[in-house]
Length: 266
Ligand code: PEP
Image (cartoon, rainbow, N blue to C red; front, side, top):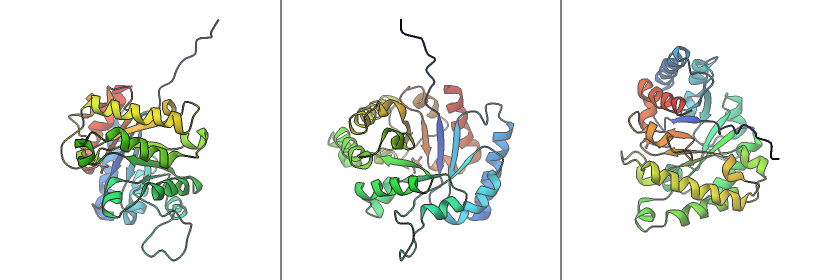
């Protein structure tokens, strides 16, 4: 007889990508507001995992404000090399020393504006893991690709290139963020069904590329114009494990409503 076993859900994660916004003083104040909301919330710190990703010069102030809150500190980018003549770049070890445990990798703004390739994103994922950081790896189709019905093809290419060669254990240490580029900062959110379908493509591709049922094991966040009004319907899809939030993460009350929606989704 098959033994019944309690199946636990993948962790829920809500990450805030502050992009190039706020000074250290302003970021510290925002983080303190969030820490106060967290302390007053009976659902915290158990669920969900909350990660704040400010710009590099804010890391120290935000890290100080988050101390003891249960919220985690992340960065928005890293360089794949450990050190050297890479003016303006930051290594994973530097981020870890600054208190980060997480880092966003391959955000579409970096892919589009800085020309980051899938191969570079793959190298950054590995560099993050080498330096003890959890990479939140962004994938997603552009508007032109979406309009040309190429979403699946693009996701398969990105996931295959970036996760190829990782062990199941290595892959488990990564988080995926599905961010359709046409939804980022535009106010045009994907429908829950569109997010679900894309997440299923990513899971199926991870199963093929990594094996060992990686697709079911990895946390996949949705990102793109998530706000307090639409978060609950996205989290109602069982394949959507949380959110990567840009604009709505810059205001404590709106961000916390998204965190609360993730907590309520169970
Ligand atoms: C992002 O920057 O990752 C993002 C999803 O932005 P926004 O929520 O503003 O669309």
